[in-house]
Amino acid sequence: MGADEEPAEVFADLARDLCTLGADGVARRVTAVAPGLVPGCEDAAICLLDRHGGVVPAAATSERAALADRLQHEAGEGLCLTAIRGVARTAPDLLGNDGGPIAEATGIRCMLGVPLVAGTDLLGALTLSCGTPYAFDARAVTTARILASHAAVALAGAAARRRGAELAEALQSSRVIGMALGVVMAQRRLTPEQAFDLLRRASQRQGRKVREVAADVVETGQVPVGARVR
Image 1 (cartoon, one colour):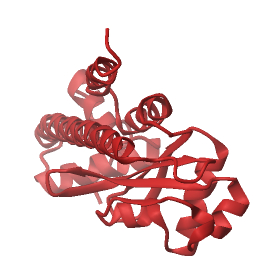
Image 2 (tube, one colour):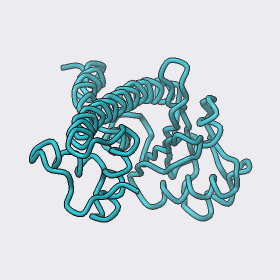
Image 3 (cartoon, one colour):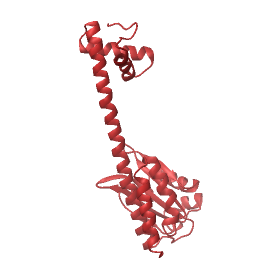
Image 4 (cartoon, helix red, strand yellow):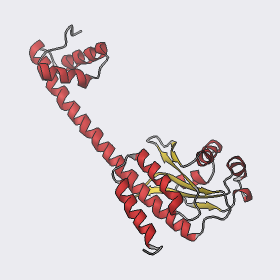
């Protein structure tokens, strides 16, 4: 097998692995493979955007990589945040620009930041680092972009699966609650609003979710003991 074929095999194996993982698993897997895949890379970190637009550290291969990202977030600037805004950039030598404090605190001299983009959605940033200045050449940048693309597609897939699971759970909860309401309405001759209020107060009294109380009603055919309508 030629050297040029090895990255292709790694990416193929990676794609198969990532399609089964959640967001945290994707972040850990991608950062773990980066040092052996991207020329010059010694450490890697991933930060993701949450549903409210906040930046959340997701994975890092070392404490110094995590610290480098944290220092950038605290300062409100840096290569990681630039990547999260959608711009890939390399800092060849942190001591030669505004990255001096990071270099002094972590020993990192060279960094590469790549956005994680799926379609038009910015999901986060992949940050690669090395203790040697000028570590990332054009080949490293290209490989990092490919790795970031794999990560972004996998993250988008994980998010879609999560939304699907949440929707399925919500639909199932609605069906169960609807069936329980029918039982309560029939037994107590209540309106839908009164029946739901009865289930809600029963759930508060028992310290359980409404869906759980409703499931008991559907299974047993019995209204919760002591349940009364206001």
